[in-house]
Image (tube, rainbow, N blue to C red):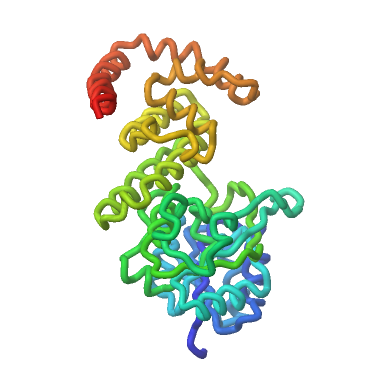
Length: 374
């Protein structure tokens, strides 16, 4: 094979329904100097059989099999054997435009960019209908630039694209130079690599074209299957913050990081399936809000009035008070409130809860006192 321009890494787990569509879209790319690295992460359906049949037809497809360890592990495995100048991550239940690789690679090379961002369109898993409302690229932040670095958009750098690894062509050398690998979380690991790549890139370019087709909430996918009780995305955010601090870049992007935390945090909080998960996520989000001093920012910075109001409440209230304070007409919220209020009241009267409240009270009061003294 000639020099590989782009290595396409595809984690595979129980996606026999969608896998053929995905891989055929990759192997039919107008740019032929590619390799497709499929990492079978312990599939229990016929995914492995589909991979082997396609490999017989096209030797650009490489298969690696491993026990089930999650999407992050699978992507790391793929990166370890990739040979391309650039890396493109694709989910096995998604598919791409025939000209994706050609278009984004040409753009990246022309601009000598470390990353080329591009847009996507959502696909309904039931009928395959395209969802025009879905976007992966915030072109409004980028419209005045041909190329950017995080220094051009420090207040919005983490909002210009999705945190998922797809939607961006990334130079392999960038990932290697900064030892960017996916943490060993089952969920949320993509936050760390995708966002750090944006900060480390010397030049980011973009195409406002919808070249990727994303299957919305396909739960069988290795990368979309999220444990309902998972709190790992919070740990991923903390890991991202720690790395930014260590690289002396956090102060530059702290505002954008705060908005990212609220976007992820409120999504997780609102999708909590049980009272216990809600409480765990609530206190993790509260810790983030207090540590970032979000109440010290003006409303305009939040990009979302709802975030601003809810963050103010969470900073000062316990989960029970928060649920009642944020009572809305939203049916799901009302059902959660009705379902959990009694149990939450019981928890709030428990001895362990009161001890925890006392332990966290003094730091919160001290922080508020210091803030007012400034």
